[in-house]
View 1 (cartoon, helix red, strand yellow):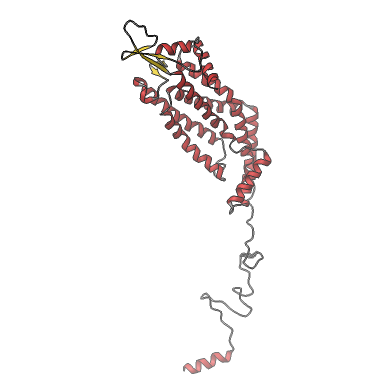
View 2: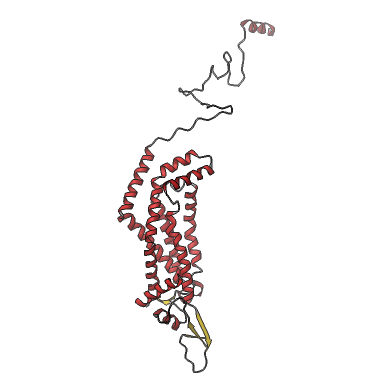
Amino acid sequence: MFSLLAGVLAFFYDLIPNYAVAITLLTLAVMGVLTPFMLKGTRSMLRMQKLQPEMKRIQEMHKGDRQAQNEAMMAFYKEHQINPVGGCLPMLLQFPVLLVMFRVLRGLVKTHSVTLKAGAKCVGQVVKNKCVTGTPSYIGHNTALYQALEKSGGKMKSFGVDFGAIPTHAGRGAPVLYLLIVLVVVSSYYQLRQMQARQPANAMQNNQMGQQMQTMNRIMPLFSGLISLQLPGGVTLYFLISNLFRVAQQGLMYKYDPHLKAHMEEVREAQSRSASEPPAAPAPRRSLFGGSRASTDANGKSPSNGASGGPKGQTRPASGRVTQPGRPGQARKRSKKKR
């Protein structure tokens, strides 16, 4: 894998002897290979949007039991052959490529230094009475890329910027590399917002996995900027170009792909039907002694035999006491005693 990626980079450098341009062309080639996975992940995301009404019903059925809800959702995904993380698949595939790109650039800028003797010639660069020669890995000695790195002492300078160094060791080109890192964070955030904008407003909030994806969308742009601080400038450039490619790719796919356009129409119809359906009636509450207990009758009043549901002949005033109906004579005797 390392030799393959380095060989492709050497091929593009042979065409255009510029490190930044060669890295850009390599990035576009890798993104072209990942395009089918991007398309598949997008279609998987749209299938989930189309089935959102059914997923919402499942969540309502198991509203009080998180474990049962997750089990029912997993069974639903399996039944409809949906990958819940399919929309993130292209982004997840980028990380192995980034690691390979990091290792390749680290191997290409390897150097060998020897003390320069009087009258000796130096193929590379003379630094403090030492001859620093580039010894790139993963590519053949007869390639233009190998010979250029050998003579430059392992420096990948383009437009005055060393794309083989990290920002803290890039010298005068450090501000450009820091600017690339800022652009990586901004483009990562915009790309994730672009993906989220094409999903229903409640699609990312009605289930635990959707909430986790929302959290990831907030963290990933910042994380990409932090790791870029320790990456060579060439890897940061690769990161930026890949983000911009995905932003443009998503816009073109939704605009010109007939399958995605048809999917979007089906999603809109399913969402409009779900919005027009009346909400399901809540299940009757169960009493402690079994059976369902209705709180009101058809007229909106509490069911009772009397004024307040007590035994027949009893009345329950606002104080809550139950009074028995007395005989007329008892009331007269009490009034005479008081006199």
